[in-house]
Image 1: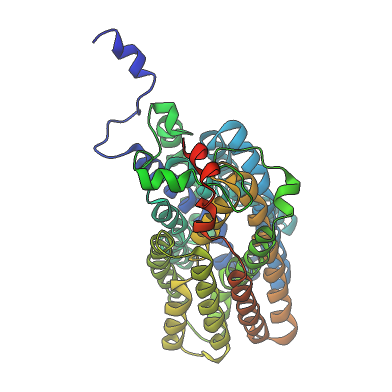
Image 2: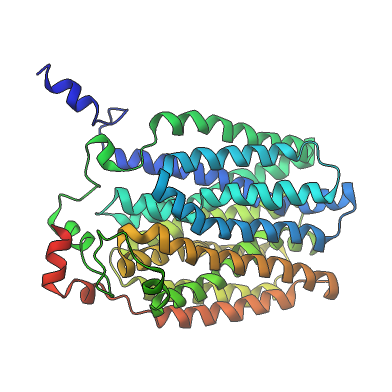
Length: 442
């Protein structure tokens, strides 16, 4: 027995848990993504304080937010490469460090270029390292069974971060100033660093485990199935030509472009300023976003649960259609009760598009290629977010309201639903070639 102990000590989890260690990994990634989301979304409640203190225009502030969103996307392919090269753990530590530096820089800023540097560039790059690419990679590395549920839980971290941070941040701004609120974000990020260093692991094999559910015959068969292009799930050497020649890649990029534009770019950046301008008190305005986030937790986890049971592209199309309907009614909403109705419809599908998009990527290109491929798909998401954040700010500056921006968002969301319906990732087709599927699952 004593001879076996040293060997096993090299291959065992750092914590003894009564459940699979993958669920603890999910919790660490959830907290990291939650914190990143709180930092990244906080400029939406900073717009009015920054206008009042520094005299910066809405268009100037929106341009910094646009750069943040764009770099969040540009960081996607880079973080996918770094995750494959150095592992999620090191990328999480490096990204949180950048977020801490970026937010700390706000304490001393006095000029717009400084705000653009710390929030637009440093925070954008830092948030990109712990964004959806990390979620997709970790979920697919650690889970075979209940993969959709795991992705849904991780996808809900963005909205959970907004539930926790935005109302709290708004209250701190109201009673103590925006600098105190920024300090709270720094403290949370600092607390996370040692937890990730001590307990995060890159792959189940590092601690002598298999991915959750890998020993279940049905789950293992699904996890080892070949993709629509015949790419083995174990093959991590997909070429750029294979990726860009697949129509599913472009349909996902197009629909995710709209997702970013109508979520982070439009609603995430401009909903609170819009609410304040139609007469909603500041804390109540932030609470609407918090309500959306609370409902989104339910919607995103349910979305992940559903894609274990239905074809992901159909569920994705439904989510975009509901989003489009909610945005088309928003220009007609002028009171708090109407905003609550909007929050319910929009909130249930806010990030519900993420789990099916991740699942389609894994099913089409192979689970070990998710970091590479999804990084580029996520880049299109953030390009859409950056364009819409700036465009909506310009619409507000020149027309005096956001109505046209909301109408446009609703229409392109309907187009995204059509794109999603044209995706053909049929799991039955993927598993149909027996000679290909059996070796992949072996």
